[in-house]
Length: 194
Image 1: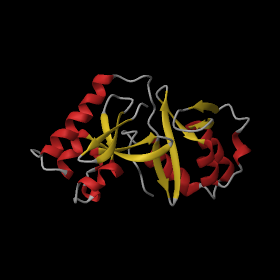
Image 2: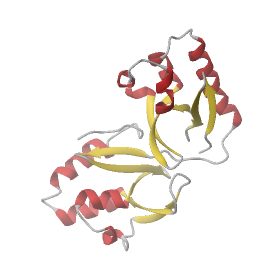
Image 3: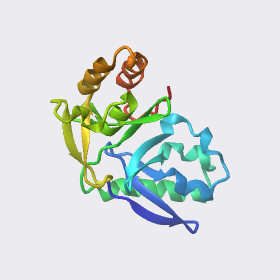
């Protein structure tokens, strides 16, 4: 994902474009520009993306009205900068990383070829396995992403179910949450809290 930093009212703000073509600004970079509470941003106006190797909250253009007065110069400048991101084009397709939360554990996932894949390290940590538990599984694959250093091991949803089956009944609560909240989620960019 190509990220561009622009000065807005003397504050550096990072802008980019999600894989689906939606422009965004990094939410944390906007904090010095407004006194509005970021907690009031409705979920449909923010997403989580990998920016410079970290999963961060980003604000979509549709969320600008919740932080800035619609006719203000600041609002207009930010909207113009966001729109200019789409006209610059993307060097290559990017993949958004979605973070689901099970109790206090993060469970990061990506959509590849239309299917959900989960970071093996997160799955094994949540279920109490060593990282090698899935190395020989047909449900795993290596994934290279510019947001991470080196390749990451991913496990398909079927591999997650396979591990859950090995931990029953201890993992029953996780299995219910996984199927109900993660797999049935129609918006692949939502963050869930269990």
